[in-house]
Image (cartoon, rainbow, N blue to C red; front, side, top):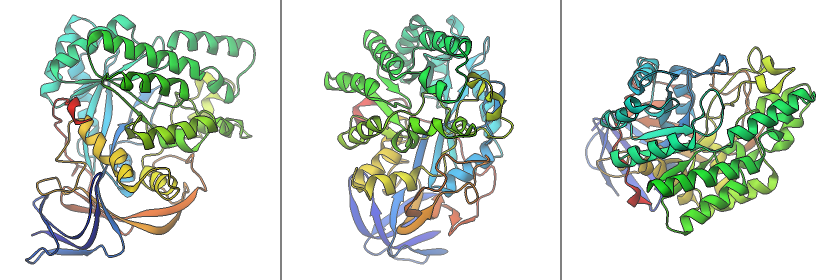
Length: 462
């Protein structure tokens, strides 16, 4: 065999056991108390956890937005992801006005080719619907794209209307695909932003105040209602507040296939960050914006209870200098987005598991297993089982960390988590049977990540 892991304390979303793991040709071939036979590489995981590789289903690498481009491309972004224990991502191919879905898909495939060091897939964001575009949805599913995104915000750029959303939901569901929505009321936000700028309210904090939680709650409820009328499942991205959470809970309690994610920034940061002096609040300008401490508590509780299913990052980095600074005199010109692809696993383990907000199994579930199930990658990914891809993370639960832009590998000049401390550090990362991170050393080469041809949506998993 190629690799043998000994003294493994394996933790999945449902099970926990100690033993050995055998890996050959990129797959897990044996699991047992003792795995017989010699291996080219033996890894001793004594005192560590072995998790399935984490999966980040919400990233924006090399993405043009608001006149800028996110600062991580598929090389730097996937390297940072690997350092953080993420072995697969699903990024967003954004359809431009007048463009075919296939053109958007192929553009992003070319962005990733020869650069990614971990496996990757794509959602396609539909921003300009017509009959020809609608007809492309089943074609995209055949290419392994089983999820499509619709924006209910960013009026005049990415936003679509309710009629378009309804038709996309119908067609996607019939084709075996899941629709995701960015749920904010773009019409209302557009007016609020304009009014604030006219009244001289230009500081970063007004970004948050122009996108109130009510706008997110309304759009979440509306999107869910449209999905119910279409008879289709729906997935809410980057949910931030109680107003939106209540809509998701009510829908799920009523038996509708409604799913939602949140992100570390909404669990750990708050509106107070926008009030940091010297324009530093711009570092936290993202959409939806950071909310209150009370919202944080509600989100943690929802993760514990299963009302939220996934923690992703919405990693969309823009440098503070030269990019975020473009909005120094007008918050609406600050590129929306923040980095986080590298820190998710350690932060959620430290702040979630060690602080007893979630169990160890729930941690694995929300960062790996459920993302794999919802987005067509299970059981090849998201678990530790014979026949699964050898995507594994050896994790030291006792090792302390301090997050800093100086030690991070993301291609951006700041981190919103600067100075945060905790315990739980990724030690070794195996992706497709290849050791790509070993005690802080990068062993992967650009272009070795593989495109994930994802399977049609099966809501019966959850």
